[in-house]
Length: 331
Image (cartoon, rainbow, N blue to C red; front, side, top):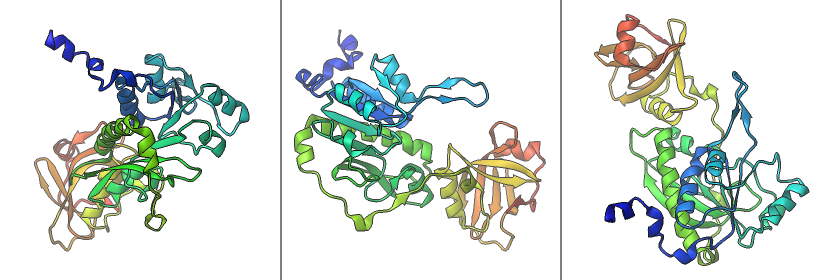
């Protein structure tokens, strides 16, 4: 039936002759790479092997945590390799034995040495979550929101020995909605990157031929996010705090202190209001909102998490903690 055919998307591959057209080795670790793996498998570019970082051990339960990419590989019968380093000549020989035509690298977490980049016929391509050369580095998704950017996107580039410095193959842009957080942008860019990767793989030699160098003068870096960055400085404008809260959501999150206890701020919005209160002071309370004075404007908190408690709506926090106007969040 038509319905049963629609439930079998693999029948709609553009050209069945493209099945296993290239011997691709995929390198990645976090869940940002999973949409690309799903798309590759669906469109006839299933990797012959997956490389990801070594398993991590849970500190509390001492359990081994598999990365999302490894879990995908195991569930799809794709061999998984987890070397400590690809600088090791023995590991390079193992990769060479796979006879890869191409490396597809997405958030692998390691810079590949030239000896590795030289192994595949077509080298290595990378899906990077920014509009290169802006926001090279570890945390482009969080940083664009923290910096208040209105636009971002995905760049597919050729890998070289530098950090996100290779030739640009393809770029796709998207607007950043005003209330989007990093987790939501992460999902959007993951899907966007997966679609564009398939377009590149469908015409790989031609795409590589027309790649262009990056403008090094426009380069900027997205340094790694740290937990300490999440401590809210109420002297900043409300718009800046809103960007920080969204950019640090869901991890590692932002926080302040109320009555000496740490509270995480999960969701808020800036409010253009004039006041003369000390930054951090609660200006007013609504049924489900807490209006807090900032260096300029106010931050309207709607979702908060007290220390050692679950996340809750502002209304539950107001009633549970008997919050009052003129109370202060520590600065």
